[in-house]
Length: 424
Image (cartoon, rainbow, N blue to C red; front, side, top):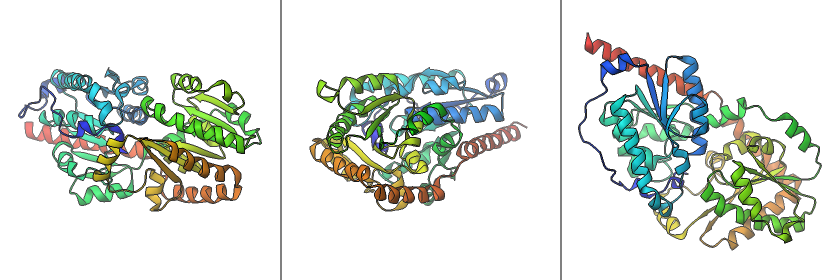
């Protein structure tokens, strides 16, 4: 949820260099240069979805140029990265503080780029605490702003809606109830669907990996510790503590740990002790989809991967960890009682969720009991799988990336026609 981007940046932190009244983009520069779309992306998952959108936009209009703040997948898709913003992904108030100087510097980088070669549009992806500042700088310069995977204001921080109205031209909603909520708030928006379902549908699986591991007749448990390093440092020790207990009760069960990158695998392995040599556990990087495809159930950190869990019908238990200060602040700001998107979509608890606040012992015990039931009771796994697949039939619509590209290109076409009429 939005809390992961850090509360501090949302509390109107002032960045240097802000200006109140600025001229719009230079028409002469826009004519002399190829049309450009600027992306601002701060999360690893956003990097994935932005890269897919960049490829779709480029396919529809090969003359487009792409610049931005983001990650390696955007770079591989053909976007010139001014700063690797996904490396600054943070969670919570305390973690933002040491990075404030970095965030200010990145805002200045974007601002200087807007002045030097104004883009035809700015596309923001998630990461609202930071992206509000990018939206403001773009809006001051008359650059159209799109918000793809927008902040979950319906869940917390409704007071921020005035920022959305003031600084964003189009909100591209990924969830149906999100679209209805933004419409009621008077925000110009479109329902495009969630790009995670495009990723699941289009991403080819490693068939050799899947075939090899499907031959294992033991119960296989996917373990998802998270994509951000800071979350991994909090969540994996909890999951490992649960695995140690579950291995005693289910010695034949196999735990497949799905990490985002090799460095995460290395860190997770280093937490094992000599006493853990008996654990039936394997570590993998970049194999999350394959592991979910073969898993009988999963123990996962709350996050957008829950949509893939839903689409693949993997019975799961959700765990998350927050500090006490952030928790007490969040309680006063949030309006939801659930952590995972499938539970939000269902309006009830389909996957059990457990939140550790400060101390982790209670949550570890709760997760262990819930996982014990999933591993030991095939009927319970079948029940939850059926509920998740029913949700997927209703909500897992593909085509979000195409619809998003269509809205962006159509809107830019309208802006171009309007400028031509004004200049005539």
